[in-house]
Length: 65
Image (cartoon, rainbow, N blue to C red; front, side, top):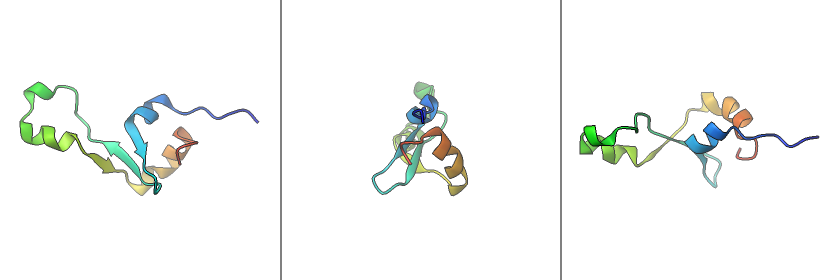
C-alpha cells in the first residue's frame, strides 16, 4: 500500500501535542502592525480545536493523529 500524503496547509496550521490534543493558531494574524497590542499578545497562543474537526484532521494529518 502506498504512503499517505500529509496535507501541507494543515501541517502548517495545526500542531499535535504529545498527549494527542490538536492545537490551532488564532486567525487574522497577517497584518499585526495595525492591530492593538492586546490582541497581538493573544495571537501568540495556540487554541485547542473542537472534536467535530477531528475526523477531517485525521485525513489531513494521517501520521500526526
